[in-house]
Structure formats: structure tokens, C-alpha cells
Amino acid sequence: TEDHLRELGFNLVGDRLYFIELLTQLYDDIVQWSASLGVQLATHPVPPLRQLGLSLNPTSWSVKDVCKVLRAVDLGEYVDLFVEHRVQGDVLFNLTEENLKEMGIEKVGDRLLIADIVQTLYEQVTGWQEQQVSKPQMLQLGGA
Image 1 (cartoon, rainbow, N blue to C red):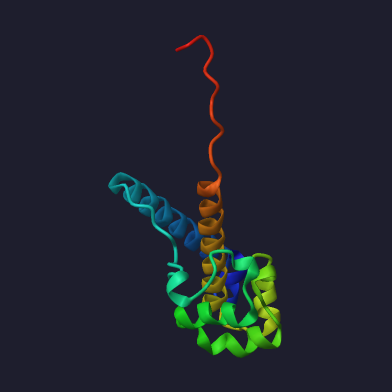
Image 2 (cartoon, one colour):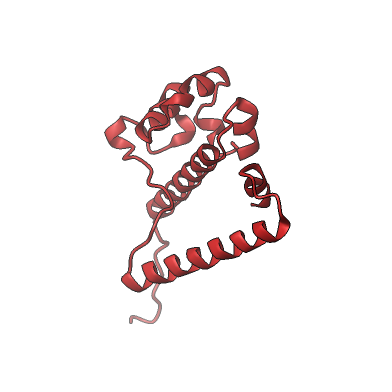
């Protein structure tokens, strides 16, 4: 967003808008390219939860479990902050970038990365839940 760019030193409105436009075009090109290849791209990969010994239901995670994910994506420097602020699975999906800043994560890139990982994790979890819901059986009438 413009606020992020302002924090990174883009002080002129025109520069921020131009940069946002370039990023939007780049993103659209990547999405179009990946779709043509039949590849779904996650903006940041979530580590394999089972290999970390984690439940596929993040809302049941403890603070320690959330910290396992941070370490797995090379963000272990924030483990103490997540412990201090008791960020566990039942609040993970409500965590905002503003919350991360309030917790003391000053680097814009790291806040965006954590937010992106949480969003990707949410999309994967909701996708897993949708796959587990069985489709209702259709009743066939007329002996077809």
C-alpha cells in the first residue's frame, strides 16, 4: 500500500502511484503466466505442517506451534515477540500488519511476509476443509 511505500522512503505521491502501478502490472503478468502453465503460485510457501509435527487445524496451535512455523520460514528472530504477546493459533488468522508493528516488528518486509504467510496458510486450511466436506448425493428419479 501507499503507507508501506512511504515508510520505505517513497515521499512523492507520483512515485508511489507509479510504483504501485508497476507492481500491479507485474503481478497480473505473473498470474497470467502461471495460469497458462497450469501452475498455482503461492506468494510465500507455507512449510509442510505435518513434517513440523503440527495439526492441520492451526486454530488449535499453541504459541510454541506458531513459533515452529516462524522458525521454519527463517523468521525465528520474532519468536520472543510472539511468545511475549501470546500469539497462538486461535488468534493467528486475526493478526494484522498493524498488530505486528505494535508487537515490535519494525521491518516492513518482515511484516508483509508474516501477513502473507498467514494469508496463504488460511487459504490452504480453508481449501483443506472444503475438500473434506463431502458432496451431497443426488437422488435419481425415474430409474435412470
